[in-house]
Picture 1 (cartoon, helix red, strand yellow):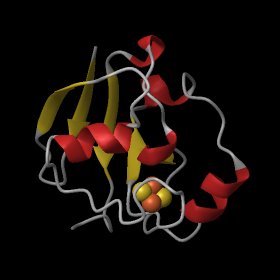
Picture 2 (cartoon, rainbow, N blue to C red):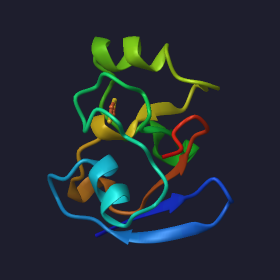
Picture 3 (cartoon, rainbow, N blue to C red):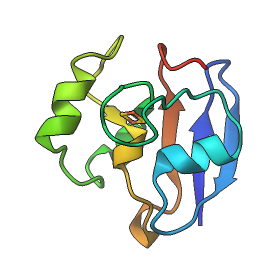
Picture 4 (spheres, rainbow, N blue to C red):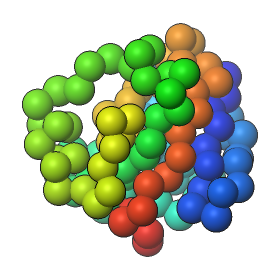
Length: 105
Ligand code: FES
């Protein structure tokens, strides 16, 4: 199972994904530049990613706390999500996301 993550320089990385892990944890595990300051508690917005249009509909809906936290993020788009709130599962094999601005370590 893999996810494809584009960094802020536009380089795409294929990362091995583990079921049940948060997408944020997978990105951090590969030491890509993603701050994720609160460690997945949904209270920092520094794990902000843009989800590729093909995948937006396949993700579960946002909870209120994710939506509220995203309001604090920079350059939010319709396909913005917090990567700590996306749990990896078989259905998300091949998920593509791009690391958003404002999440630098
Ligand atoms: S790591 Fe802080 S909101 Fe995702």
